Image (cartoon, rainbow, N blue to C red; front, side, top):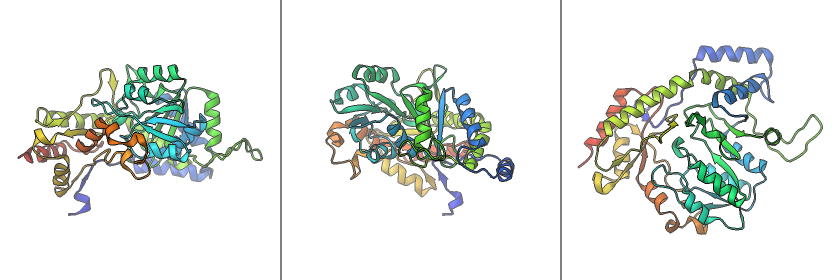
Length: 373
C-alpha cells in the first residue's frame, strides 16, 4: 500500500505557493515575525469582518485559546460539558483546575442536551461549555436561558463551526465566548491556530494580555499570562486562506451532497441533514452504522475501508469520559451517558475535503454498500 494512494478523512486546503512566497518576502523585508505585527492585526480585522463578530483574538492553537478563555472569565469550581468531543475540550478544564461534569447528548445532532445539563447543575457549577459538534449549532436559546437562570457563564467550543451561520447570523455570536480552531484538519486552517470571539472590548483586552505573558508594556506585567500568540507567518497564511475559503466550502458542500445521494435509503445508515436555517461549512461528514439493520458493525466497516486505502475516523470514540484521566468522575459513568455511548459506538466520519473528487466519494459509498451481507 503506497501512502500516496491512501484517502484520508481530511486533507488541508493550502493557498497557492507563489502567493504565500510573496507574503513571506514582505515579512522578510519588514523583519517583524511575531508580537502583534502588522499582518497579525490585519488578519484579526479580516476575520472579524468575514465571520461577522465584534472582537476576535488570534491564538497559536485552539487548545491554548480554550485554556485562556476559562482564565479570562475566571472560571472555577465545576463546568458542565460534553463527553462527545475531542479531548482538548476537557483538558482545558483540567489545566485550569476545574472539575468537568459530563452531561449526555441529544441523538439528532450529537450536541449537549440542555435538559441533562440543567439537571446536572449544582452550587459548585460556574459555567457550561457546549460544543457545536461537526459544526451543527447547539440549542443556543435553551443554553442562554439556563445560563441566565442560574447565573452561569456560557463558553462555546466552536472548533468545528468556522463560518457556520444560523438564520443569517454567525453562530459565534452566542454565549460569553466562542473558541475556534484553525488546525490543519479544519475547513479553515492556519496550519495550527485558533481564536477567541467575544463581545466586550474589555474582555478582548484581558484576553490579549493573558496570551502575551500579561504584559501591558515593556516593564509592566499585570497578571500571569502565557505565550499563545499567533505569529506573522501563520497570519499571512490565514489571510491568503480567506481568499479561497468560500470556494473551498462550496466544494465540500458538493462532496456532502454526493455522499447523501449515494447513501440515501441504505438500511442501517443514518445520515443527518443540516438544520433548517443553518449555513454549514462541512468540516465533517459523519454517518451512524446500526449493526442490527446494516448487518455489519461500525468496526467492521472501519476496518474494511482501511483495507481499501480509505482512512476514516471514529470521531469521537472513545468518549472523553472513558479516558483514565476522567473515567473516575461520577458523571463519567456510562449509565449517565447512554446516548453518547451509543453514538460513539456507531459513528464514522467519511473523507471530506475541498479537493476530494466525486469519483472518490462514489468509490467510498460503493465500498460501504457492497460490504453489506
